Length: 259
Image (spheres, one colour):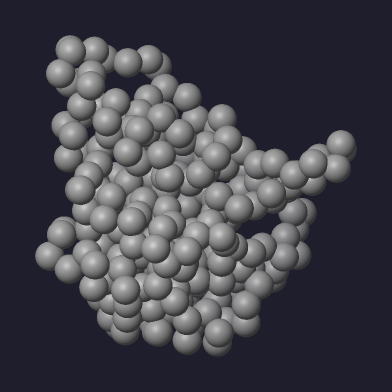
């Protein structure tokens, strides 16, 4: 195999964010994350304290989402939400930018919003992932094309103190001509662009569209260090199966839908 089990497992932020998830389901998800030795769980803010209790000593970090999923909370609310999550045991914070402010070109607001969360998190030695929601940016905005806008957001995020830039929330649904909602999530193009638009200090996280082991491997090949996933068990069970049989798998595909 190209990468070790630990290298791939420690890329995964096991996502426990669906609105209907019960506490029992989230507890089961934390236990699954511990069994598979992933990097972190990504939980709703109210559950951070319980997740920290369940994962104590496991080596799996607790991550909490802030301003999730649409990023529209006031900056002070995001800051307070970050403070609370960190006090409850979150070691990582996944925040959503104010997308409308970005689309309108209010760069000072966007930067100050990110900076407030980063400063609050860093005071607690927690690290921050900044979510752009790239599905909303496909037509560009603020007089910039799509790629230019994403590059601008990478630059702003790094300047504001981000530890990661992240493609998506997994819940950024776009209404199509038929009236149905869908999203792509992470794409190979965006991962390459975001990796090239930040210095080595800032890492890149994929979310949405990575549903199997080959997709996870592709994220790593493209320079991503983390990947949000719900298919954690399927991915890592497949790794073990291939390792046992000497299989190498396919070429890898990203952007097929699903967080």
